[in-house]
Image (tube, rainbow, N blue to C red; front, side):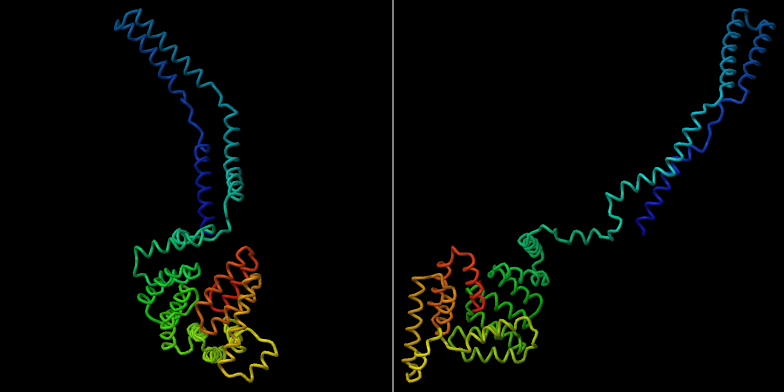
Length: 367
């Protein structure tokens, strides 16, 4: 509303500037007094000649000049005002009153934005461009933090973005700074543990586990920390402990929490057999075996699966079962080796590679 009021004032000022000179007629160049002056001068010349003040030649020259001026003044006084001047003034007045607002609106409506709300300059400078990439935004935040290294809010914003970009080493530093300048909390400790595990290729290292344990000490039911502690137990071969942690987490969580499917999938993963499912005959035979023989049988099944996958590496589900089996058996080196072989085997098939990465995420190993 203020903008339109300003425009109206500007239009009125422009019209006034045009109409003001048009509303005043020019004064006539003389009102007849000039001819009277010249007649008096002629009479004065005659008096001077009679009194002998000037000679006849000078008197004649003065009469000629004064008479010339008298005739010019009389002709100018008789000239009527031009009719076209009045029409021109009327046309200019109509153009100023009607044409100027119409022309202004005709230009503004297609080119301007009359319905656009106020957008302060300070706010515009803080808004990122729509075409600006995430890497550019991260670079801007990093440049700001170089000048303001104690800006806890900046570190709090930067850390999860770096984690999303899989820049885990930088994310670890950002989370540590966030804790230092924003204060300690269970959530920040859990986030730090997560990026430490990400930096280790999905393995919950002792350093990451320490962060998760700190988070649980601050908040007993911190979901992310509890999930990764269960994952650490699974990776160490303590599947019963992992199942217990995840089962307890699900029992206390609301039914609509977004992370419930992930934890449920992890619980299903350790709730069944600890290795690839054997046949019914193998299960019947395993009942009469001691622990050592049963373990040997399971390892034999895993070795046969590994051999088959070396011959036919297109079986994504087989690779996932093999990696999971090695993790459950606590053989991390073989699990990492199988993971690398799986990615190499399906590297030329984008769809299989996507399925493999999704399955690895469900195993807690990242994509």
